Length: 557
Ligand code: GLC
Image (cartoon, rainbow, N blue to C red; front, side, top):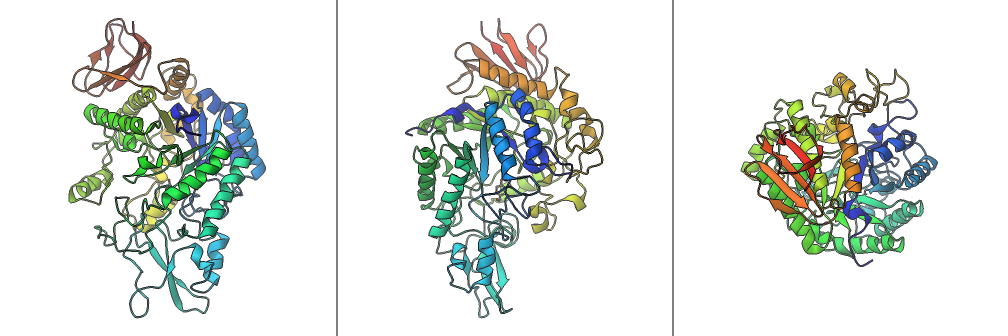
């Protein structure tokens, strides 16, 4: 393969978070049979592919991103036969299947880590991870000052088999997620086998978790101090945890395997400044554009963000992807309903200014859900009209909001515990989907008395797939219609756009042949003469007046 362009370049990919999508067996936890039962729903929605968040055996300390066996299915989710049925069922409906690869760390319940704990310092078993002696006369200080992305230190001290305090191991995330050592051939070989195992089962690609880390600077230098008292851990240029030169070798190795299967794709989850350098024809195909998650509700900011990312991708001959949310982010309806609608992602260290905004963002500003939903509907039509692919996180198509007030006792995200509750964590976007009925579990489970693993808000009664189905103005039908038009309209998908001057607070562009898209971020405006409305996120008046906070797709005369 000599290009990074392919079926994925303008694909609409739907993210399934298996635990929260659909429960087939009535235990309150989503599973693969539940996913199979919703394949017709996905086909009707009109997505090109699904990405399944980790479905592997896992103690679930980080919602499955702590994998204890990469070549099996979590018993709560089903069996390999269920996974085969899901892959076959998706393919029968023309839907491709991507799954998650978690290569930066295993679970501490992985047999390799158990073996490392039972083995001596310096043993081959320990060499698969980053074990180091501690500093200080008794080794009681961590080897570096590095902080974990979930809060607290990135090193944990173990007790050796003889009962004495022992070495320390590195974990960028939870203590239950030890980082593997990518300079070790065992690690490289194991992940080669994992890729082949799933490619052989027919999957079409992988979403690569924390794709910008893996290799660490083996000199283990301390990093600048962050306000929480630990060394910085967020991706930045030159940071010892991120984007090390040897990462390119891993990506090339994987790409050779993927290419040997044909039309397979890698999408990288990466936030490091150099993430676009991954997208060469011998490395990775595509990467999430998280700028679109973090970009505020503002015409100028959105225009800048869109242009910037289109240009960067054009320069390297890869396709852009647009993202509104995922299992780690506040749901867009809630984000756009806040006083601050953007997320100031600190790319190069944490400046006092970004800290201030960050604190304001985390402060529980009230949410105007109605405003947020109106804006989220406008944004999805805007992004779906742009050149590139689109990722939809389950429930966005129903217009679900974040559950901001989950009972503390129900919270499971390790970042809640590791920050001593300073942040509530990511559970609020992971609440099980509402499918039908008037009361919880809203058809998520087949048993009406089943308790979903996170409680669903009563207000979701009006946001079930069943409730939205007959309503032509529902968010579900907006998505269905948008995806149908996207498939049928030559101008949409890959290609280019031309911006039009539509005045302050309005973004408008055209795409050949004969397609226009206009978004009002501020007050109302009027459609160009002769514009024939194809779809709008809010009703357009008969005289062509587009209301505030609305996107319209139209055919040009
Ligand atoms: C990625 C995942 C996130 C997980 C982390 C550690 O960012 O999206 O859910 O906690 O990696 O694996």
